[in-house]
Image (tube, rainbow, N blue to C red; front, side, top):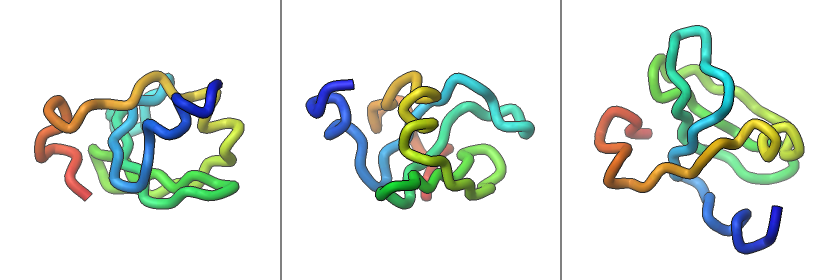
Length: 74
């Protein structure tokens, strides 16, 4: 992945991952960046930490704020 693509996501961005969370949601809000990426499920609010390499493999798209709305508020 190029550095241009990695700069698209930041704390507070909403992303869509390949696999759904057990609650049925596939959208996540980023709350921590570093060696591990902290994500909060937009459906149930569960927080998880993923290693950066696994996050990059699982990342499907960064959602624009207009599509996210208030359903994925942090």
